[in-house]
Image (cartoon, rainbow, N blue to C red; front, side):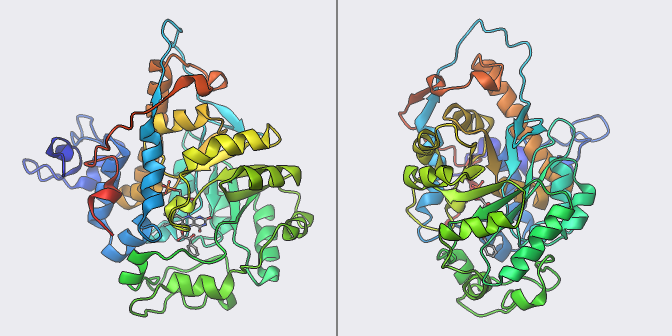
Length: 414
Ligand SMILES: Cc1cc2nc3c(=O)[nH]c(=O)nc-3n(C[C@H](O)[C@H](O)[C@H](O)COP(=O)(O)O)c2cc1C
Ligand SMILES: O=C(O)C(=O)c1ccccc1
């Protein structure tokens, strides 16, 4: 299955015995360091898989159940093809835009993910520094389960920080984290609504996944961090933790109480239907993230790219619509923007970058996506984001995945 034609991009070069880590050094490719930089996001995944302990790799990579939604997220991009226009003067392509009123260098952001220290020692500090690199300055959605403090992140960030919340039983703890995020200058709250409990993630169960000592939910007090480090064969410590501390009774009537506590914009993450999107927009929600949690929650849930048009139509311009799930190429970003996303969020690839090379690796992944998007805009004859619309797209036939680098999650089964 592996296409050996791309292996040389990612692997150790036997002639020079180059450490793959050097391949993502910013100096890579120069005279001082002739090692090639990874050419694809998938190449970072291969580096990450080599470097991470198997249990950590499978925690990051896995989805719920048969992982059909993980695969569907990718397949949806392969079914859409692009209709390039020509003679469009693409001598300058402008990727800059605004999100929630903040200027950003590209229509990209980092999806909230727990415990970035699983991928590299600096954890989320490396992530926010990468997101703030010149030419990017993109938002980072910081998980309530971040492994570095909000204050440390705010001190290092030059792009906007948003805080992702789970609806904890302990509302007092929620109030405290919201207040701390406000004081640290965070720009928005993102309430995740697809996780009343954790999906059945078979890879976590098989590995008895638990947090290694030293990695903790740094922004929560010990009263709400139970189970995270407890190993139990055939069981996920994260699932037991979520069962104990995430309140599955969350419903529409709770949103007002959250909004009363803060002047920050409130977004909902995990909406997949027109019905829910219309209701959220009607309540004055400030943004919607179309997401199926990267296929980690309801196995069989619709692909996010397929859900996007009905959500955009239902919202009808009342708030911005964002998307995450399966973004691995600049052309994926272009397709989501053409269907009405204001910006897209990137999940696993950021952790692959961190694992491959810390801040430089994460910056490498984000810069690659940005550069690929610029290439795609130029070659599609769409030099500005404002001009993007559904006329850019044509339906199928679905192209087969290039499994050697596009979908590393497909190369090795659960
Ligand atoms: C390791 C990992 C941890 C995650 N943790 C969170 C989290 O704490 N909160 C949340 O709302 N979503 C979480 N997500 C879901 C992401 O925000 C996002 O929806 C998903 O990863 C996007 O898909 P992608 O990984 O294919 O880009 C997590 C995803 C991964 C892979
Ligand atoms: O792993 C996840 O996808 C996730 O969202 C999560 C939920 C609870 C605790 C840690 C991570």
